[in-house]
Image 1 (cartoon, rainbow, N blue to C red):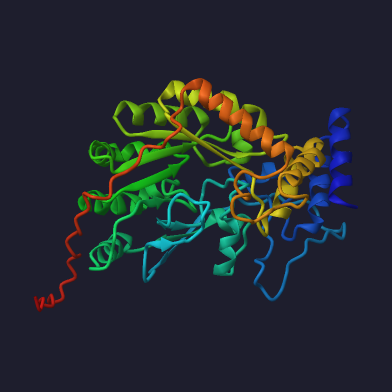
Image 2 (cartoon, rainbow, N blue to C red):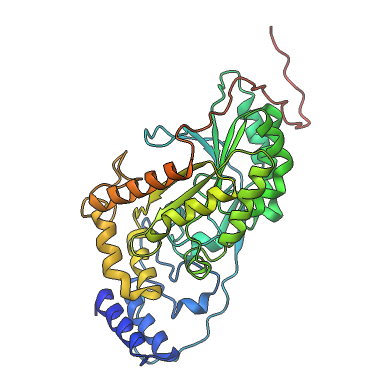
Length: 397
């Protein structure tokens, strides 16, 4: 049975109130047959965005879920987060994508415990031999010695300062940052070097670092964007289960703005038939809280996300599955995803055009800046090298 057919039956049963919890588990199993290591029901993995853990695309063997009807349903143990330390050789990542506003970034962590089902970074876990599903949000990597690496790279004679995006791939203020403080250590080096940085986060944990951010903002060295995907708390719990609530994110915007830190809002991603009706409301609430810049991105479904999106819809909104897929494909040239520069972020076609116009009209009406605040590069001073205990080589000049 196809996932669309199963979802349609599930929706009909729910509507007629003919489905109980045990039937819901059975339908969820049926829906998951094509998704690999499928869980029985989203509710059994509370606090997780993905419902399955299919093999990574580079693996020699693929897992396929199979239910022969003999096994009894068993309670699934809570999935614990595992943390591994890695020692990277460098910490600054560079890119030459013409549709991205920065060309260098730092990601203190691999994987993200926020568990956002739509995260475009999920497929990167395949490079670790892991799944883009549950592995991405439960098997995390801490980049040990990030601050020392940053010192070394910033102090290179040929280094030229340009804005560093902090947490562009995975959220720099995800829950494990509270314990490991890698992001804080990176910010301390950037503040010492008076180096410009842009931050995008969903977490109000960023308020912990207001002391650094306020001082940097006084010299126009920092800008923060807070991502607000929905204002519906119940929907947010399904979409991004371990991220702070929408109210806490708006509070973070308010406190950052009050402290003099330039702050904007990212209404992203815009997902057809799920949260697309909230664009204007999100912009209105964020502006009232103090955001003065705004951006949006339509849903992107690279690689493994194509199947996981269908899975998430089938479990959470089976009645919207067909419409959400149809509208999403209409924004990407009839495909699940179009990776072409200049089109992958905003999409193309009538529906994408409508989303763009709604965003522009609302942003202009509310008074968001049309020209972003430019951060300064001219204050940069190479940081002192990290103390390693080794004798320092003398300069020849």
